[in-house]
Amino acid sequence: MPQYSIGVDLGGTNLRAAAISREGTVISKILGRAELTHGREAVVADMVHSITQLREQCGDHELLGVGIGVPGFILIDKGVIVGSNNLPEFDHYPVRDVIEQKLGARVILENDANAAAMGEQWMGAGRGVDDLVLITLGTGIGGGIISGGKILHGVDGMAGELGHMTVVPSGNPCGCGNQGCLEKHASATAITGMARMMHLGADPTSEEVFKMATDGDEKAREIFVIMGRALGIGLATLVNIFNFPLFLLSGGPLPAWDLFAPAMLSEVKRRSFTYRNTHTRIEKATLGNEAGLFGAAYLGARIEQKA
Ligand SMILES: [Zn+2]
Image 1 (cartoon, helix red, strand yellow):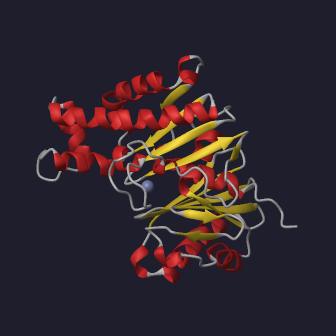
Image 2: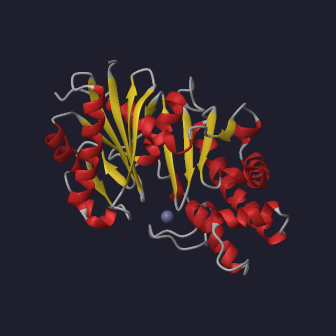
Image 3: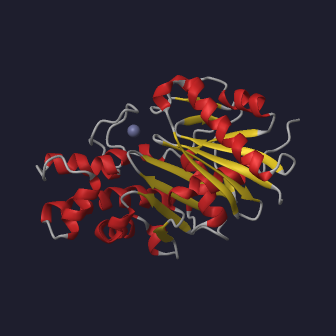
């Protein structure tokens, strides 16, 4: 058996885990449900169970470490989650240490979008690129910044919350306390919100709005143009700040690329001198919802030894 690490992605509905070799080959994968409503102990038990199963399959001695991607702010040094809407019971609970103890293996906790960015850099659209930004479009919008091949954490581990950049100064109120956040104007939730405002169908999902737009519905098409502009405003700011060669988008609304990307790119072009004068690429991520697993495994294999 080769040396490997285990990546875990704890989402709102799924708990996925994979044993991945140092070279990036998936050795084994488990898809479980994330029973977040059953309480903290049950979720921890589920994670430990999945990890143990993979370890039994792939060997005790070859395991390098475990990386876990979770939604929410992560205090990296402490290994705790704070302010996660999906995991309120985990607030300040020493989840990393508890899992380490149960497993007797090293564990690293990381924000799910940061892990996804790392995954894309390692095995996805960002291979060979040391500096990139990933924006994940979902119910909300997450972000991960890879600088010099490493996740940019900031002092507390809370950097890269790209969904809360202001893109409309007097825009929709956000749960973070701000208004006009990117995720309030460009996420899947924002798409369905606009559809409701425009009285488009009977409360359609973002996929249904996409279907209407591809069928030629003018209002539905307009929604993706508005979304594209909001993304473009956010991206122009990021391009100006970082001057990175690559900016990636992932998530559910990605199939609508042809509907929102023209508005997005023309907005970036209009607002960013850097974009107009460099070879900055803004592209689709390629690993889909596997990105977080790869990134978590990558981090699990490279946990620094405790002093
Ligand atoms: Zn916000």
